[in-house]
Length: 188
Image (tube, rainbow, N blue to C red; front, side, top):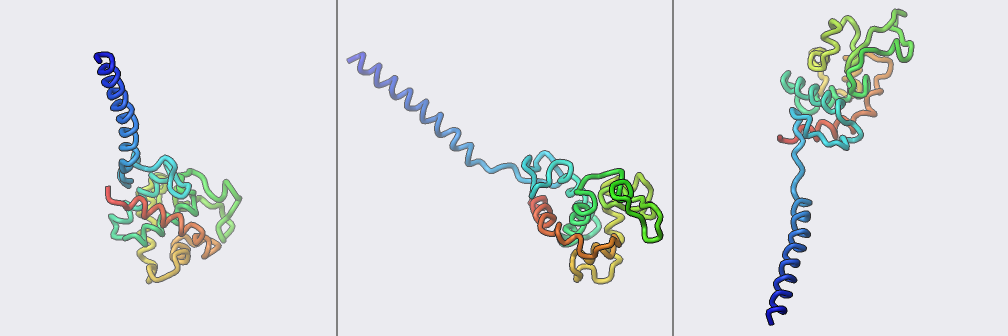
């Protein structure tokens, strides 16, 4: 009888242990992931958002935060992120179209574009154009001066600021920019 009790207690203990071993991971699997918070890059998904990750998402968040501080809501934030996606793939680069493609300005002079928005020297100093928040501010100051920018096609509104050769160029970035802005706009 004593042997039977020991066996039953052992089986019960093993059952509890196995049950806990199964239940604990199941419980953890149902925990919600941390919310994505634009002000905290540690919360950005390592897999990225629509293929944009790491530094790119940090730069998108900076663009969004700058836009918001200047009074631009979601639609304006999307335009800024679309622009930087199209101009620099959301990388803050210290070279531009002249170095990569030999592009010149309409007057034949060498381009001087750098930074997230590939802004030329008449936009500001090198330091200003290479600072993501300042470059975003420069972009939004000009966007705000475009008459009825919010009612224009997004790519055309951007074109009126950037003045590139293809007014429809930025359209291809609309879905990605929207996904990034929406994901980074979630409450922290």
